[in-house]
Amino acid sequence: MRSTRRSFAIRPVWLAGLGSVLAAAFVFFAASSEPRAAADEAKTALPAYLERIPLDADLFGRLRVSEVYNGPHVEAARKALGKQAEELEKTFEKEVGLALSNIETATFCFPRMPGGPGDEQLFMVVVSTLQPYDGAKLLPSLRKGEAKDKVVSLGDNMVLHLTGEKLFAVMHKSLLDAYTKGPAPAKEGVLAATIRLAAGKDTFVGGVNLDALPGEVRTNLPIEVQPFKPLIDAHAASAVVEVGKDLKAELRFQCKKAEDAQDAERSWKLLMKLAEFGLTEVQKAENVKRDQEIVAFLPFLKELQNTVKNVTTKVDGSTFQVGATFNGDLPVAPIAMQFFGKVNKASARAVSQNNLKQIALAMHNYHDSFNGFPPAAICDKKGKPMLSWRVAILPFIEQDQLYKEFHLDEPWDSEHNKKLLARMPRVYAMPDTAKQGETTTHYRVFYGNGAGFELLLPTRIQDITDGTSNTCMVVEAAAAVEWSKPDDLEYDPKKDPRKVLRWVNDVCQAALFDGSVRAIGKKTSGQTWHNFIQKADGNVLGDDF
Image (cartoon, rainbow, N blue to C red; front, top):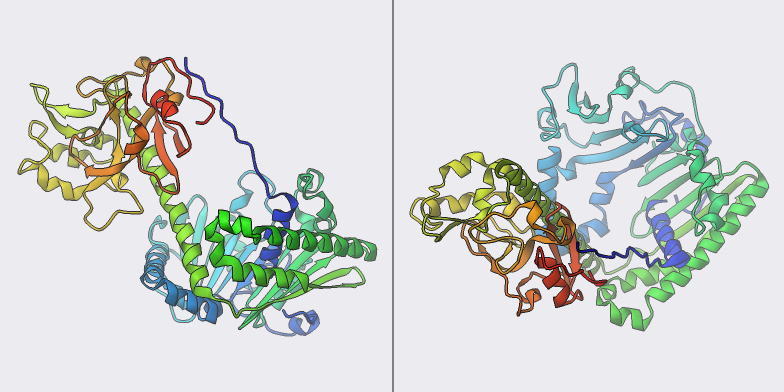
């Protein structure tokens, strides 16, 4: 039986990286450096999107989406991305049933901090719009029926409440009664002042009741985080961001005692030192040379480093306060292009991984029905390949009707069968290259000469003596073929199989016979690939797999 040793060793950027990430999060998601007068805010009548938020909530955040969407930074990014930005907005509108440009505010709330299984669903999101929305179009793919008394079931214990012509909410059904009763009850918690502050004009206001964190969060801190325990031990933390040409941020920690606030300040200063060190390391010439993708982010990293250096801190009794200003005069276009390029690549990889999982599951369902995986091709009585294995598994990817329309005794390009090419299932489309009406696929199998598949005969699980978790089923191939054509990768033990694989960022994904999917690096040797492809050679995979 073939065995393999897999290493999951983590290479952390240790405390420096942690500091950089937390510092960046603070700058972007943490009013100006001047203290806010919560008492004055308390005199302001709460707007509709806040009046039903419980004042004793444990986790809260409100974002002025329209302000960010129409702000100079997002506008510059939209112009840089062009059609890509338009497509993203169209996709959002299709999935949500609401144009992104019509959202005024989005308010998020956990009335009680999650502490156990299922608690993560006990939240509500309240959305206010600039113009009246169409309630019948909201969240089309999640709806489980029509609205009844302003309530639409979304399944999984979630509901949509059509509160007003410019206000709606999504929440766990257990929160619905309290929400529909109207204004929040008078009972207040440590975030009450923060919630009232959200009635103002700041871009973002949020807070967390740190006392409500599960006990194990405080007692089982990783060793890297323990120096910052005084920040976590505070009663509560609140953050305010004001977005204009520059970003101004304030973060407050309400501590239990004055000495606790002083400890929190020391922890924060340590965090900033680590962040500054980490940012310096990232920008070193050798690191930039090694990773050219950093280049587009250098102006951002330099300004972030400058912001970290100039963060102000203040202790006022038991309150610890931090203020910072981030210069917004940066080249947004290259940063946006680089960021969204990386996001798109990661998204495409995730979609392809899911495609491979669905294909592998269909293969196993085929095996359960016919006591074997499908041959590499559907052949006629003389052994001539007519159609691909991708046609054979159609009934197992919810395409039974399409399968029945194929003439299995005719070749893939017969007058009848060729018409079905245009109906290629989405699961066969490579996400980063697929176009409207695409009929080719990169998902192919190795066959013959000891590979997992044979051209004419089915492979049974018991035939895979090297182990299903060590043997290749389906790969992302370099060359695409018409999806119904019986044109796969004939395995040659004397040739390097890596040359026929599709490499994206030096990674090729493959489904294994156990149904799992692996992302395999280009440095994996050709010999290891030979061992991976063959189902019964008795060789181990090697440490480079």
